[in-house]
View (cartoon, rainbow, N blue to C red):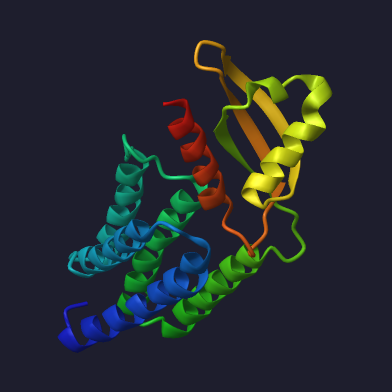
Amino acid sequence: MNNPIMILIGFVYNLLVALILIRLIYYPKSTVQSHVFTFLAFNTVIFFVINFLSSTEMGIGMGFGLFAVFSLLRYRTDPLPIREMTYLFIIVALPIMNATGIADNNWAGMIIADGLILLTIWILEKGWGFHYEISKTIIYEKIDLIVPEKYDELKADLEKRTGVKINKIVIGKIDFMRDIAYLEVFSDQDPKYNWNRRMEAVTASDTDDDL
C-alpha cells in the first residue's frame, strides 16, 4: 500500500482500535501506566513496518516473525503477567491484521474482525458468566498466627488489614531467622478494590517492620 492517504487513514483507524482496547478495556483495571506506552508504541511501529513491506505475503511472514521475536522477550526486573502478555499478543496482532486488510481493500471484514475482538475482550474483562479467583504472595510478620489452630485469627487479621474477603491462605516458605512467612492469599476478583495495590501495601508494611 503506497498511497499516502490510505496509509494515513489506515493508521488513524488502527490507532483508534488500539486506543479503544487499551484505554476503555485494559486501562480501567490496570495500575501500570508504562504498559500503556509499550502497547501503543508496539502497535504503531508494527503497523508501519507491515505497510512498508513490498508485498502482502511478505507482510504476513514478517508479522509471524515479529511474534517469534516477541516470544523471546524477557523483562528481567519486571516480568509481564499473563494478562499483560495476552494484551501484548493482541496489540501486536491487530496492526498485522489491519494492515493486511487495508492492503487487500477488505474493510468490511477488517471492521467486523476488530469489532468482534474488542467485544470478546470486553466481555471477558467484565467477567460475565465466569468466576475469577486471584492470588497474591505476601510477606507476613506475625509468625505466631501461622499455626493451624490460629487459622481463623490469621484470616481475620489479613482481611482487616487489606479490606479484601479472603477465600484461602496457603503457607509457603517460613524464615524463623527473620520471623516472617510467605503466604499465598486467594480471593475473588472484585472491581471495587485493587487487589495488587492492597497486597503490595501489606507486603511493604511487613518488610519495613522486619527491617
